[in-house]
Image (cartoon, rainbow, N blue to C red; front, top):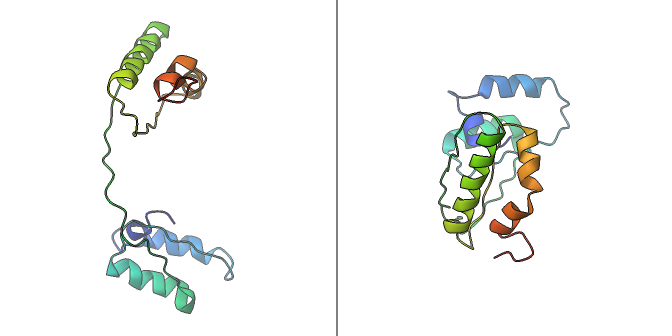
Length: 132
């Protein structure tokens, strides 16, 4: 369970989690992952895992990682896709710092594949032969 603290919260998905666990084998392995772990999650995790609960904690805590979202909106059609690609390239070249990473979400697989195999995009993102 990723984001287990939210999944195990009484106001969250706990009934669905319990229902799913009731349908699988008792000798299962259950991994619960979370960046935060409130007492409520600890209590429920103990109830679900019994004496087999093992906690692994990263210490010191990982510092917050700044994140931002950039949208490249437009209409459909080849011209609009090309315009968004150009705006994305400009952003990569002018604003993406060398130590930063980027995650790109696309409307469909065809657009994603087009960007993934675009050498100009790869180079601008630091992954080409002359990358950062």
